[in-house]
Image (cartoon, rainbow, N blue to C red; front, side, top):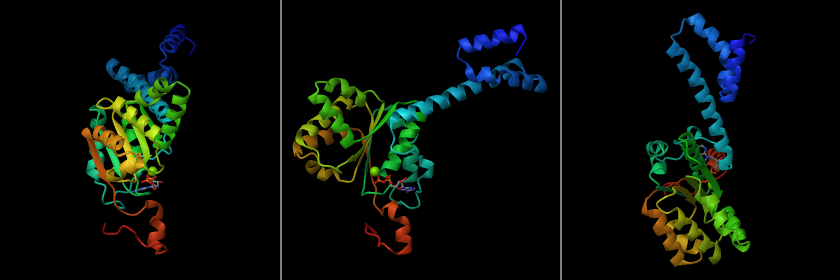
Amino acid sequence: MTSPQMVRLDEHLQRLRLNTVRERLEALLQEATKKELSYADFLDGLLTEEVSAKTAKHVTMRTNLARFPFIKGLDSFDFGYQPSVDRKQIQKLSLCHFVEHGENLVLLGPPGVGKTHLAVGLGLKAIEHGYRVLFTTAAAMLTTLTKALNEGRFDEKLKVFTIPRLLIIDEIGYLPIDRQAATLFFQLISRRYERGPMILTSNQSFGSWGDVFGDRVIASAILDRILHHATTISIRGDSYRLKDKLKSGVVKPTTAGA
Ligand code: ADP
Ligand code: MG
């Protein structure tokens, strides 16, 4: 990197923040000479490397911002173990048209059947498609919003949950929700209604959401908005956590044939 031209190129690339090209320029130039690449092919290869590196960086950054509880893609989901989950339906959802159209996805089922795994897997797909994603549990979100309300910062905090294109609310129904928190939940759902797609997971059937929210009227207002444009997947079957125990006969299947 000694000729004045190479020094100048290096400065330009630095200024334009084309860091990958900057690192790879010498090698790419040598390769182009060796392979006698056309100008267009050389430029194509050069820019493809920069775009791939920038995309990968972007995906990593957005994945960190999404605050997933674990990183597991759909490729590690064993559809054979959970026949009530239709692989084709999940593949279709992974194209993220539902995110583009502002629709919701609700995953219902008992603990351990893969609701969070599927939500994370689809969240990762949404990030690959360029969307901003935030993962939260219902309990964590409501604690944050209740605290914000008490501190007079509710509107400001609500934005945390309304700005990301896709909001994943996990574990609705594991912990009881008091009346005030139910009202805050309703406000969030209203704010995102028909604009912000969500993935919601629950171990409780819709019929029990009145008990989850401690108020039938609020629960039905919440459900009305969520389900207006939504796909619901009910997962039946055994907990994946018990897989090995079930195999060895230590535990008997609880939901076989359900
Ligand atoms: P849920 O949210 O329904 O309680 P999780 O998604 O947390 O269940 O699943 C529990 C654990 O089992 C996770 O580590 C998850 O990755 C794994 N798991 C669940 N179902 C499957 C599956 N069908 N294939 C592979 N791993 C699975
Ligand atoms: Mg879960």
